[in-house]
Amino acid sequence: MLEFVSQYKNVHLIVKEGENEMRKIWLTVVLICALTLSSCGKSDDYGQKLVGAWYNEGSLTPAFILYEDGTCEIEGEYGEGTWKVDKNKQLILQNYYGEIEKATIISIENGHLSIEDGTESMLLYNEPTNMDDSSNVTLEEINDNIEKEEMADTDIEVTEETLASDKFVFYNVNQDEELKDKSILCRYRTLNGDGYECLGIGIINDELQFIPCELEDSDGHSRASYSVFSEGYAYINYVIDTEVDHFVIIDIDGNVVYESPNDAMYEILCGGNGYYYVKKKISGFDTNEVSYWIVSVDGVWTAVDFVTDTEASDYRYNGSGVLQLGNTIFVKMDNCSIYHTFSKDKYWPEFVGFTENNELIWLHSSSYAGEVYVTDINGNTRQIAVTGRWGKAKYGDGLIFVSDSQGDECYNARYIDLEGNVIIDLSQYKIVNFKTGEQFYNGYAALQITGQDYNHYLAIIDKNGNFAFEPIQFSTYSNFCGIGTFSNGYIPVYENTYIAIVDCKGNIAKVSLETDDLKNLVCADDLIFDKSKVKFYDMTGKECSISMGN
Image (cartoon, rainbow, N blue to C red):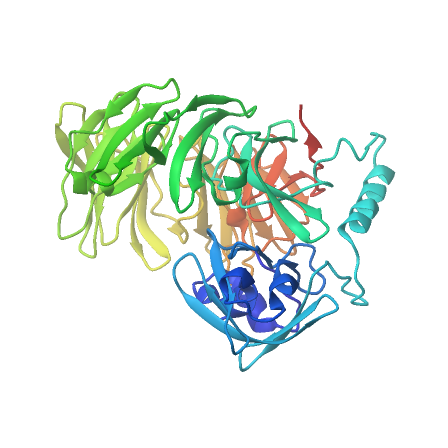
């Protein structure tokens, strides 16, 4: 996430809210400085002066990094951008989505970059700066101070050789709502004489140890794509020139358990739970063949030859090892079981869940009504529930959360079984939010409800519909939801002036974290993981150091 000094209020708010305007308006200010000179027609001496990392005043994280090859990285932005400088000293950026922004270079001198987009000007630095006196401070000095503070608070001996968090900056983690494997895959970089250098991809495991992925084609790390860990495995796609060339599947220790053959171009499109949807491409002077496969971590390949090419190229991964093709076809990837559904009123089916008996639960939701269906492995389909307009359904622990919705609120909320019988009726409450994980997880479900006093409350219920504890009133913060995602038995809540981490027994840990969006927080085993900052905290809010793994 990009952070700007407070005097640039518009920039700060847009980036914090994460809205699309970030790419359209102030992406200019953030990304335009990511324009590489090597692709700009050699605009005088701007080239070497622009290449490197550029920081906003008071920030330790670079707003963007410019590379000599014409690419750039922008904090909080997906993929790579390209940049150049035209003859009018205009910085011109084309981001990953093809959007172009421009700004004028006012000056580059003494490590300071001044730019203007016609209405606003901005000053950036090629090193982190101190917010109070704007004097340059090196990352080494900052880390030395942090290390001294940490050593003063603990009896554990900390050395420079053991701390990866002092050597590297971690960023761009692709993490889902849960931290089931308690390990993450992310990019890392270190500081050299010219600024931040992207080194590649590495693992932070469940023991908070950092393990670099020492794989071939390390020069392609900066343009590789990768997944989250699922059932102990993750994948990395490597880019050669402009296309994905091959992939590897690794375990949580960084070992390669499977690598694609070298007879074609292979790319993992999606997947998890040990099964992946792969595109194979053979191209040449007189050949351009594309095929699709399901591949396991054991290297077993199964051809996806039961759908059309159009359906095969229109894919979606729904989690839990379930692939959706051509909108109406669902595939359970571990055994390649195929489930055919149907569209209705021009709306496509939505995945709800899979039962232990290999039954598919799916939903049709429209402005007219919602309908919940169950399809078994033999293709038999039964309707088990009907909702009002824009109905919602979520499945967990054998029960389906079903409700009508209108705007941000939902009504007629209840939990039903697989035959449509109402097990828990929630009609006495007004559910106002769908981001809390209303499906059951290990016997509990989290709900955001409105009390009789019209205040917002967090409630956690068991499978009998009883409150696990007295509902907790919480606050809303800015335009963000006051309640986070229920994961691994924990849920973060804004309560007055602090963040409360609440477990299923009502135990509350009050922490102070610098985050504006609770959806970025994932909790697991007394640890809090901030996906946006790629940092771990204990239940007191103290940041955990990352050590070097073996």
